[in-house]
Amino acid sequence: MLNWTRRDFIKAGGASLASGLAGAPFVASGAARKARVVVIGGGYGGAIAAKYVKRLDPQIDVTLVERNKHYVSCPFSNEVLSGERDIESLTFDYQGLAARDIRVIHDEATAVDPVRKTVSLKNGKALEYDRLVVSPGIQFNWKAIEGCGPEMEKTMPHAWKAGEQTLLLRKQLEAMKDGGTAIIVVPPAPFRCPPGPYERAAQMCAYFKHHKPKSRVLILDANTAMSKRPLFEQAWAALYPGMITWTPASNSGKVLRVDQSKRTLVTEFDSYTSDVINFIAPHKAGQIAHIAGLTDAAGWCPVDPFTMESTKHKAIHVIGDASAAGDMPKSAHSAGSQAKATAAAIVAAINGQTAPNPYYVNTCYSLVAPDWGFSVAGLYKADGDKIAAIPGSVVISPTDVAPFTRKEEAAFGLSWLANITAEAFS
Amino acid sequence: MRKSPLLSIVAFCGVVAASSPFAAEINIVGLANTCNSCHGMDGFSAGQANPSIGGQSADYLNKVMREQRSGERYSSVMGRLLKSYTDEEIAALADHYSRQEWRAAVQERQLRLSLRGKRVHNMVCKKCHGAKDNKAKDETIRLGGQWAGYIQAVLNRYVDPKYQRPSDEMAEAVNSLSPEDIEAVSHFVASNK
Image: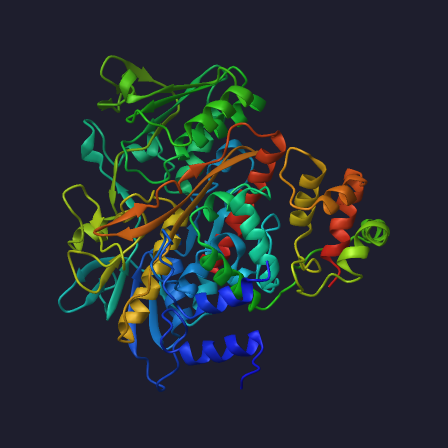
């Protein structure tokens, strides 16, 4: 066949390469399931990992363990604070994954035995795995700041896991007197959603502007750098002039001590109080990662940058916010990207093949008003023992653009939400 | 841009692309999977601002991505991401997505808007895009079944000289349209399955 058309050539090439092409669906080798993959955590990372393992090799038995029946998206939850959207629009269930032959167990993983390769559940049962994906997200390191504890969630909500917390913070904003100052306490890096606190300040002001125009937002920041800073500062000045004060660590913005009974936040030189304190405590990897012995001294999970496999225990992959993923920010998009690389690596390993090249991408939109959005995008690759940003690839939106572009980016942000939630939950 | 078929075959066969900052060898499934979070599973977008790319022609996708990378065509995020992609990676992606099934976005059809759009289409668009716009061909976008919101945003960019517009013909054609015409014709062509 010398006169092949291009399409024929590709088809034939595709077919002959299929078995060797990493990431392509594998042909069924028999009726029995060939291996068991268990995923702990049904956020963006875990849901996407489960879905892609199944998609790449339907013969693998996939089980997703997730405490809650519903998942509430953190991305775009700041719009619940402004009143722009309701929490239902960000709430997803696991029926879509269940319909894809993924076993969804609503329970809590209480222990992992990396030698016997089992996951214990709260209900007393245990799951055996050949490969385990741990995607538990973050928990708060309350001990990192004097006077803090989990009981603060009720009085100074973090709203850093979306759902009830988001609604509580919204309620506090509604109850606040006009002329008040809501305080956002930003934890030290690395924390989930680096631009989140600054987007949140804007979304709070969007609410104030219409309902409590004399009110203000104060950001007490444990960092001296701000994600997407030129874009936030431009937007704050244009949309909410004089309403937002950012106090970085270099200006005594780092909270060192909390007096819960007096609702006082103490920094190096100052102390603050307010009826609305959005206290985002320092982070560490989710609890099961610690129980399973996957964490390092900093509280995060070191991984092989090519496969996201834990460097502490074989056959366990840690993805998303809990992982120490080098230069990648802790975002939903990062988690999804890591999940896909992990799924490909797991499927390759189960089928006795080498893991294909991972591709790591992050895209993150911030909306400071319904028609004002901007983004950061970046590419990352496995480079030696870490995931490194590809030089020059991590770039934020330009500041010198027409309002039309901001509106367009807001629309892109909404479409991103529609697509990544479809990718994860449908 | 006629080079793309050859390039895509080379890329598909996994030949080493030494200049890529991303990876030594193209793993097209992994590379293409990175697009899904914004452009939908297999390039079928679930959000109306982001275009469906699965089932567009390889030549069209290749051309658009190269133009976005060079800045010849305005983009908000794509140009930034594509800066680190090689010609081979772009060609491989274009080829991959051209082989996905085209699925028309489900959009509500409004009769009055559609009628106005049809008139505009007949006068301005049909000459180059054809009567139906619903096939993947050459370097031309497949419009029928694309998201109206996306088409409208692209047309709006052609009106504003601040945006880098890759086609003078398009700019000239679109310049004669009012914002209402643009909305109407976007609506019409999107539902033109």
